[in-house]
Length: 270
Image 1 (tube, rainbow, N blue to C red):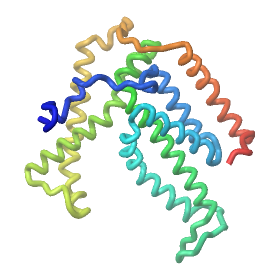
Image 2: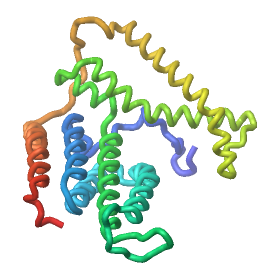
Image 3: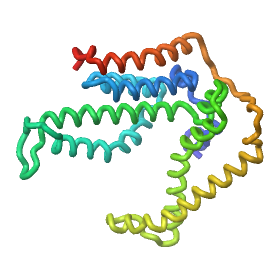
Image 4: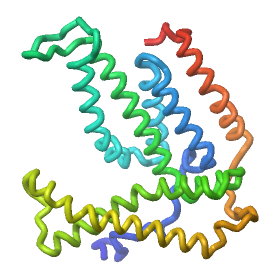
């Protein structure tokens, strides 16, 4: 109990009111198309402009939706990939001769550094766009809305299972690690100890994943997943004419922007 109001300090999420906000109230399909457009423009528009503009929009959307602080773990998760991009391209960019300095057999170049910086921004923009979508849209909501729009049940199941698998695997890793640690396994300390701790982790994780697949398959068959009739989707989500216009604009405008960038008509942008 808290010292001030007698209310528990930790309240389960299911008893809290759902988060609100303009971005969160958007239709799930609208948010999906926004994330896809942001990812395509970040990777498809040459130079700095594409990823910088997309990253600014994503961060503004995340702040508007109230998930700005929750984007930090996703940003940290890109560090290994970003580090490899920076090192490989800065030191080993093919054909570059504008050296920054010479470090033994290695010579970082300005061309490689610029390319690595742009690639880093593209990766971060993509990761942040996917994170904002995941943090503001439940997998069930997205799949239900797509299925209501005509997506096949098998495709919907694959999409839902893929989205749900990541947090489930992370949760299972935490559970197995805590169980092994309670049995006396040393999973902390030096690197070699942590590597050794991965061996007893892999078996339960693999068999647990296979068990989950078998249980989901049996549950789906018991509920008539293979029945030929089309499922009736009961859940509906708010939609509006401006959102439909935005989806049409994204579907038509994103390929046009990519085409204009490919043929060089956006060469005046940095």
